[in-house]
Length: 131
Image 1 (tube, rainbow, N blue to C red):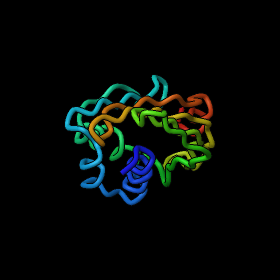
Image 2 (image 1 turned 120 degrees about the vertical axis):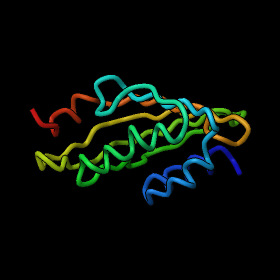
Image 3 (image 1 turned 30 degrees about the horizontal axis):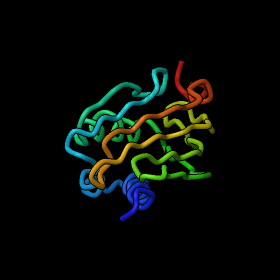
Image 4 (image 1 turned 60 degrees about the vertical axis):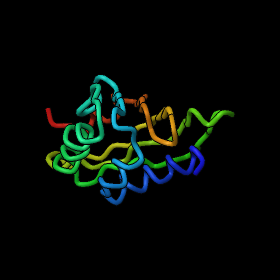
């Protein structure tokens, strides 16, 4: 499986809330870095920590929250994948919507996601948050 296919499968797992597939696509010690200022932003280690501290809270706080992909690029050696797109969501409490540009950078090692880094327009997301 190519690195692009790994990431395509990862997004399918997100969309379907298929956490077993998410775990299988990530290395045991996956590092997950989300922007400061992003809801639930921070640095997480291991798939279970990402599921517990990122995915589950988003399911609770947002009516919907998804990442729409515009473009995907793979490095020549397959060790990195860059995904350009936007977050789309509606906050459950405020009912306000957001559309925020974002870029995801994945590092692939031994056909597994080793590291995720997010670069997102957090100001656009903040307009949908309470307070």
